[in-house]
Length: 351
Image (cartoon, rainbow, N blue to C red; front, top):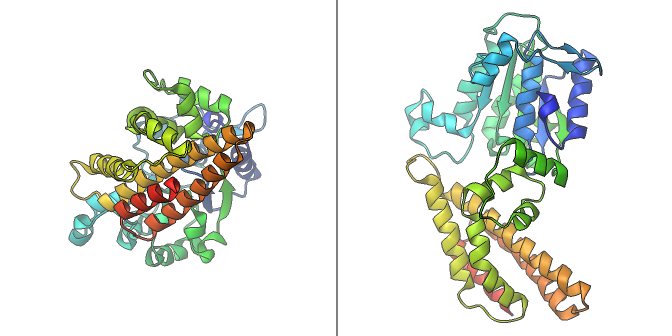
């Protein structure tokens, strides 16, 4: 499974070395931008350390037998000793209050019920594997202070054979006491060849899209490329490009702020449709981050093009707009009204 991880040779190399050493650390933080394979790598890591069939190949890398019983269970998503901990588990919590809550954070109760308690129990499958149980905490940056403090004891004093992997784009939002007890593994954007290989492997349908723009906008993130193919991001690009071209040329675009807010709101509403527990606020932030990325890429492209032909004033204007986008992103994180943020951003960029 680790052989199938694309574009992360350094991270895979670190994990291979740890597995081969015979001294597997019990707590890990996989960190890096969203959508670049951290969770996929965590699954591949778990598939290796949970399988008694794993042994060194000719290159000395420990790999499992793909036909083993454990690999079959993992492919089916039914291995009893692999635990995926997500905020969505709140929907099946034993607590009525947790089940009724909006899924904006990884609640302490979810961590206790789906990680701390099972970590203390005996493994279900017997065997001489390198790990007895693996817990992968997705979006670990959504753990609140109470949840992290609750998790700390398990990380400090784990049951024998227990491995915990925290997956996050923002390791700085984990407590220093958590980070200091974990092995940190950094992940970076994929190169162009790896992105193309990923698109072929997954048979991603990019028909009808501007593929050159899609790969450039994805910036080495398969997750973003998938979002472009499966959501309205390409539509955003098509709808906004004429307005942004006018803005780059120094023309005022009165309607831009309202359109930005409208597109983000529609995307967030579609993301939570049919799920009463899903958080519109979280969906708004996700959609806004994608919009800021789109705007930032557009302004960076404008700055490069203007600088290449000596249009200094246009390049400086684009550089200022990049700064305005960064400020707007921080404002959204600080709970400033989304509509106000986009109206102000459009007005600043038009000055």
